[in-house]
Length: 334
Image 1: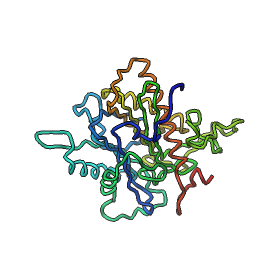
Image 2: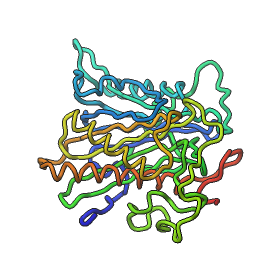
Image 3: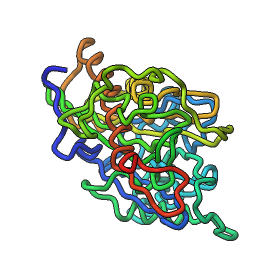
């Protein structure tokens, strides 16, 4: 759209006040990603997949008491990965952060997980899974600059056609407001058009950020065919993401932002939001911008959320790398 450009880093940290850290284990083929806010941020959530796995999402409903959160976590490990939130919470508690209740402080750390237990990694971790320690390490290493691809929560991701990954992207609007996304792509469907190397997200690409191939021409005969994981099962897949902005929004506005970002899932993956996915987007507003949005600007904000999420998905796939014992090749190895 005219007047839009990528931010300086083309990462979610282009929204001021956001840092991101990863922890992962190549042998385990899994990991966790922590998103830390300098100050508590307004947040909500939209869940459109049929098989979600979450922590602390009920408090994000607009009618509930807590208005802001300290961090978010995306993790592999299926339900075991929910422990990563406890690790992030522990680090923030050491820093004296959290929601004050009767003189105590409780860090608010919602989380979402994806299933990567059957991706060829060694999951024989013994009595206790490693995700709490991963969460703590990811939070401790949070920074403005961070890697994307086969890292953090994206370390063990797969899709129907290629290895998945962790992606991020940002958009600066003509008004100066920034919208950015972070996403771990472990989808039932495919990010690619048919049997080609072309991304469904191609119409939204900025300056060749995921290869510059555009859409295929001529359109392939199998372009609209559904490609899915052959052993798809409930809880076995999921795309989980975060969309953030420095615009001022309340919890209801943050939820609407998350809903809009789900359109980015639909622009970048086919099929999407299936019964076997746990597709989820957290919507976050840091409030760093003083701009007051009119209805047209709010519509533009939603469109930017969708486009930015689609770009982040493609960038995660584009940056992923192959490793020994992988069950799928990376896009780079096609």
